[in-house]
Amino acid sequence: ARVVVLASGSGSTLQALLDAADPAWRVVAVGSDKPAVTALDRAAAAGVETFTVSPRDFADRPAWDTALAAEIARREPDLVVLAGFMRILGAPVVEAFGGRLVNTHPALLPSFPGAHGVRDALAHGVKVTGCTVHLVDAGVDTGPILDQVAVRVLDDDDEATLHERIKTHERALLVDVVGRLARSLPTPTPERTAPR
Ligand code: GRF
Image (cartoon, rainbow, N blue to C red; front, side, top):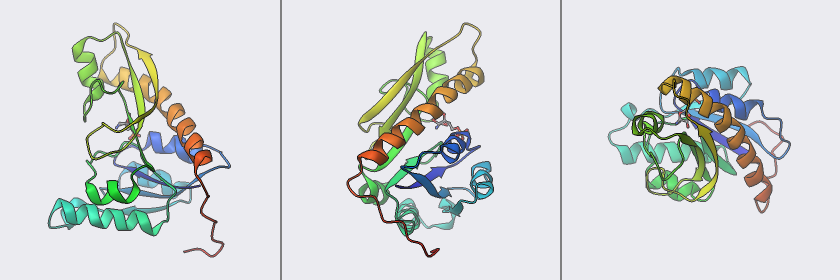
């Protein structure tokens, strides 16, 4: 299966996908909303093509969403995976790839959705948090949950130590779920031989 990954940051989650040697799928492209993020360097180092669709290059969010959907579609993905992608996707992307659009979140949804799930869980004083892999729908962190892993919060945890511990489980969970989804797809896109 052909997987396109979207990332906005350091790309350690992306790296786990790039390193996964699962014959059922491969990362065919990595997209970002910002140029020169480490995630794009990781893709390039793995020989995977990259693209950037930056909101500041567009008049409004719908134009950005439409351009992003077109860039993703050009790679003919079977699955689109958000690996630390810090933008809310609008209807053009969700409608184009809904049902094949996967996100990972560093909290046990529906608890602590949004951009600060780790910080919010810590601030709330939970003893157990974790990570969630889910399908993306029109909401924020609200789509059908595919799988979750629980992670215990330690007394001396701060946001960084807790997030790092969650990430170790999150990477493995995402690779596992992508493999399951890839095997569940009806008909894999026949791999083209000629480079596009
Ligand atoms: C991951 O925990 C992801 O769930 C969250 O941000 C983190 C991304 O980390 N949205 P990285 O950029 O992949 O290292």
